[in-house]
Length: 166
Image (cartoon, rainbow, N blue to C red; front, side, top):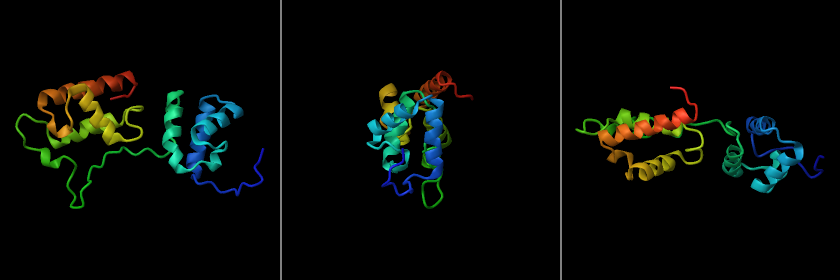
Protein backbone atom coordinates (compact mmCIF):
# COMPACT_ATOMS: atom_id res chain seq x y z
CA UNK A 1 0.00 0.00 0.00
CA UNK A 2 2.71 2.43 -1.06
CA UNK A 3 1.82 5.85 -2.43
CA UNK A 4 3.42 6.29 -5.87
CA UNK A 5 3.69 10.06 -5.30
CA UNK A 6 5.54 9.64 -2.01
CA UNK A 7 9.06 11.06 -2.10
CA UNK A 8 10.43 8.82 0.66
CA UNK A 9 11.41 11.76 2.87
CA UNK A 10 9.53 12.44 6.08
CA UNK A 11 9.25 15.82 7.81
CA UNK A 12 9.65 13.89 11.09
CA UNK A 13 12.94 12.42 12.23
CA UNK A 14 13.45 8.67 12.48
CA UNK A 15 13.20 8.64 16.27
CA UNK A 16 9.78 10.29 16.23
CA UNK A 17 8.54 7.90 13.55
CA UNK A 18 9.81 4.98 15.63
CA UNK A 19 8.00 6.33 18.71
CA UNK A 20 4.77 6.52 16.70
CA UNK A 21 5.12 2.89 15.71
CA UNK A 22 5.91 1.92 19.30
CA UNK A 23 2.73 3.72 20.38
CA UNK A 24 0.75 1.78 17.79
CA UNK A 25 2.20 -1.50 19.00
CA UNK A 26 1.69 -0.76 22.71
CA UNK A 27 -1.91 0.35 22.10
CA UNK A 28 -2.53 -2.83 20.07
CA UNK A 29 -3.90 -0.85 17.11
CA UNK A 30 -4.28 -2.73 13.85
CA UNK A 31 -3.17 -1.07 10.61
CA UNK A 32 -6.57 0.36 9.70
CA UNK A 33 -7.31 1.73 13.18
CA UNK A 34 -3.85 3.31 13.34
CA UNK A 35 -4.26 5.00 9.95
CA UNK A 36 -7.78 6.15 10.84
CA UNK A 37 -6.43 7.72 14.03
CA UNK A 38 -3.66 9.48 12.09
CA UNK A 39 -6.13 10.77 9.52
CA UNK A 40 -8.62 11.95 12.15
CA UNK A 41 -5.99 13.91 14.08
CA UNK A 42 -3.57 15.06 11.37
CA UNK A 43 -5.43 14.70 8.09
CA UNK A 44 -2.73 12.26 6.82
CA UNK A 45 -2.96 8.48 6.63
CA UNK A 46 0.80 7.91 6.83
CA UNK A 47 3.18 8.84 9.63
CA UNK A 48 5.75 9.80 6.99
CA UNK A 49 3.49 12.63 5.82
CA UNK A 50 2.86 14.15 9.25
CA UNK A 51 4.60 17.41 10.02
CA UNK A 52 6.00 18.44 13.42
CA UNK A 53 3.14 20.91 13.89
CA UNK A 54 0.74 17.94 14.24
CA UNK A 55 2.68 16.27 17.06
CA UNK A 56 1.06 18.06 20.04
CA UNK A 57 -2.46 17.09 18.93
CA UNK A 58 -1.34 13.54 18.15
CA UNK A 59 0.45 13.27 21.51
CA UNK A 60 -2.69 14.44 23.30
CA UNK A 61 -4.87 11.87 21.51
CA UNK A 62 -2.43 9.02 22.18
CA UNK A 63 -2.43 9.99 25.87
CA UNK A 64 -6.23 10.09 25.87
CA UNK A 65 -6.45 6.52 24.62
CA UNK A 66 -3.89 5.26 27.11
CA UNK A 67 -0.32 5.58 25.83
CA UNK A 68 2.19 6.96 28.34
CA UNK A 69 5.19 7.45 26.05
CA UNK A 70 6.47 10.54 24.27
CA UNK A 71 6.62 11.32 20.56
CA UNK A 72 9.53 13.72 20.87
CA UNK A 73 12.41 13.66 23.31
CA UNK A 74 10.98 14.92 26.57
CA UNK A 75 12.19 18.24 27.80
CA UNK A 76 11.34 19.27 31.31
CA UNK A 77 9.96 22.61 30.21
CA UNK A 78 11.80 24.22 33.11
CA UNK A 79 14.87 26.25 32.39
CA UNK A 80 17.20 26.28 35.33
CA UNK A 81 19.27 29.13 33.90
CA UNK A 82 16.94 31.10 31.64
CA UNK A 83 18.79 34.39 31.91
CA UNK A 84 21.83 35.29 29.78
CA UNK A 85 23.80 36.42 32.83
CA UNK A 86 23.58 32.92 34.36
CA UNK A 87 21.02 33.62 37.06
CA UNK A 88 18.61 30.82 37.94
CA UNK A 89 14.87 31.03 37.62
CA UNK A 90 13.30 32.51 40.79
CA UNK A 91 16.75 33.31 42.17
CA UNK A 92 15.46 36.76 43.05
CA UNK A 93 12.86 35.10 45.32
CA UNK A 94 15.41 34.18 48.00
CA UNK A 95 15.49 35.93 51.39
CA UNK A 96 11.80 36.81 51.58
CA UNK A 97 10.43 36.31 55.10
CA UNK A 98 7.44 33.98 55.21
CA UNK A 99 7.88 32.95 51.57
CA UNK A 100 9.49 29.91 49.91
CA UNK A 101 12.99 30.23 48.47
CA UNK A 102 13.81 30.24 44.77
CA UNK A 103 15.08 26.66 45.03
CA UNK A 104 11.78 25.56 46.59
CA UNK A 105 9.81 27.26 43.81
CA UNK A 106 11.97 25.65 41.10
CA UNK A 107 11.52 22.24 42.74
CA UNK A 108 7.73 22.64 42.99
CA UNK A 109 7.45 23.68 39.34
CA UNK A 110 9.76 20.88 38.16
CA UNK A 111 7.77 18.25 40.07
CA UNK A 112 4.51 19.51 38.58
CA UNK A 113 5.92 19.59 35.05
CA UNK A 114 7.12 16.00 35.37
CA UNK A 115 3.52 14.79 35.81
CA UNK A 116 2.33 13.10 32.64
CA UNK A 117 -0.97 14.36 31.34
CA UNK A 118 -0.86 17.72 33.12
CA UNK A 119 1.87 19.65 31.43
CA UNK A 120 2.35 17.90 28.10
CA UNK A 121 1.89 20.84 25.77
CA UNK A 122 2.67 24.07 27.65
CA UNK A 123 4.26 23.37 31.04
CA UNK A 124 4.50 26.95 32.28
CA UNK A 125 0.85 27.72 31.48
CA UNK A 126 -0.30 24.43 32.99
CA UNK A 127 1.56 25.20 36.22
CA UNK A 128 0.06 28.70 36.47
CA UNK A 129 -3.40 27.25 35.79
CA UNK A 130 -2.87 24.61 38.51
CA UNK A 131 -2.00 27.33 41.05
CA UNK A 132 -4.91 29.51 39.99
CA UNK A 133 -7.53 26.76 40.09
CA UNK A 134 -6.42 25.09 43.30
CA UNK A 135 -5.13 28.00 45.35
CA UNK A 136 -6.38 31.20 43.70
CA UNK A 137 -2.83 32.38 43.06
CA UNK A 138 -1.95 33.80 39.66
CA UNK A 139 1.83 33.29 39.87
CA UNK A 140 4.25 31.13 41.82
CA UNK A 141 6.00 34.24 43.15
CA UNK A 142 2.88 35.04 45.20
CA UNK A 143 3.01 31.83 47.25
CA UNK A 144 3.52 32.11 50.98
CA UNK A 145 4.96 29.25 53.07
CA UNK A 146 1.56 27.84 54.03
CA UNK A 147 0.25 27.82 50.45
CA UNK A 148 3.58 26.47 49.20
CA UNK A 149 3.25 23.49 51.56
CA UNK A 150 -0.34 22.92 50.39
CA UNK A 151 0.75 23.09 46.71
CA UNK A 152 3.64 20.70 47.36
CA UNK A 153 1.26 18.26 49.08
CA UNK A 154 -1.15 18.47 46.12
CA UNK A 155 1.67 17.74 43.65
CA UNK A 156 2.85 14.81 45.79
CA UNK A 157 -0.71 13.41 45.80
CA UNK A 158 -0.86 13.74 42.01
CA UNK A 159 2.50 11.99 41.72
CA UNK A 160 1.24 9.17 43.94
CA UNK A 161 -1.96 8.83 41.88
CA UNK A 162 0.07 8.57 38.67
CA UNK A 163 2.62 6.17 40.09
CA UNK A 164 5.59 8.53 40.06
CA UNK A 165 8.26 7.33 42.44
CA UNK A 166 9.80 9.80 44.86
